[in-house]
Length: 75
Length: 378
Image 1 (cartoon, each protein chain N blue to C red):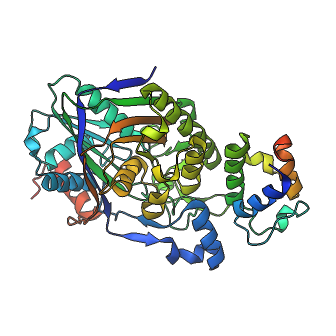
Image 2 (image 1 turned 90 degrees about the horizontal axis):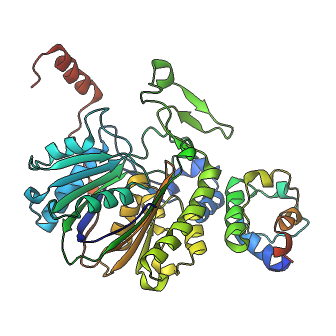
Image 3 (image 1 turned 180 degrees about the horizontal axis):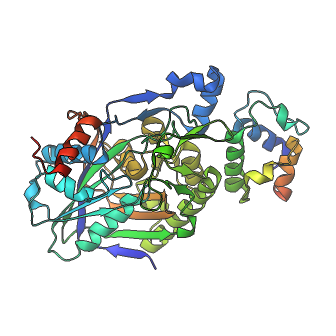
């Protein structure tokens, strides 16, 4: 999956009405809550076969950090 | 290996009942900061909708007995045929005797009838079907009444937004009969008892009886959700990971075991934990969207033991289907999955249970006071 497509998907995963950018700070998102984290866990699992835990989200600062979690799966 | 192929038993009919009282999530906007956008987002993501709540007078036996009475009458079924009663639930009416015995008496079943309880939650219906069908392998037990249900909302405080809008109450009755020509049923079952405290109700049993102090205590979690010791608690993240891992795996195992493909199955009834979990399972298993759904969660919420039966009664009502997979998982941790023949099953759908017998706690305590004293009750 390319980065652009992921950013569009992320909008839907977080149920956000505004577009997501890689440089966005997660704590600035009103939608960055436990619902969103569970939704991201589900997305990573079914799309990339990557199992995440809530601990993995602890140190994330930006959208770019989420992308890094996917490793090579997001180019 | 916990796998079985069971012949000679056919499901004849089933019916679910739900209490008359319900709450719609749209009427609870105060819990979403009175913000319609936040409410809509939670509805889309978790599937919150309507949930049915039993009143303080109602037990799972009351509802299951009502479901059975309705089923007997709709199917014109002769209750004297019943040789076996199985009752699967997680919150019995009394510490003893078994709910199956209570229900046996209330339903006026014949005395030449075995009655047993199975104590399981979300996975319970699969275990109860498997037990019933196993016990009916010889033609000595010809007819079985299977009751199932749970008061999953029991003692959840409305302000607890982690649990309150998830759980809802329902109970059901299913009739099975020995039939030589019946299609085979396939089962795959499993347990991980090391996960016993992932979904747990620690108080109220022999290990930790509730004392006055705990009865009235309310504990707040870090998100300010109030918890009462009388209610169970769940490790959400672990349960999410467990559910989305185990359900696709056992459904694939079952299809391999029965040597059929997803295309050959007419419907997959999946335990309605919540919309997010069910949708993830459907996508991971690659089930086409017309063969499985999380819609029942939005209509009836998570019915625990009755959940998959609620799906059958809701999604397959009035439909002509044959091969149905049922997949359930949860407290235990326990899971099971089966392929059954649903052709010509009488599907009584979902009806409303009305509690006509409202006996207050005071009246009940008075009754038992007299009972202990050895005085006669009216």
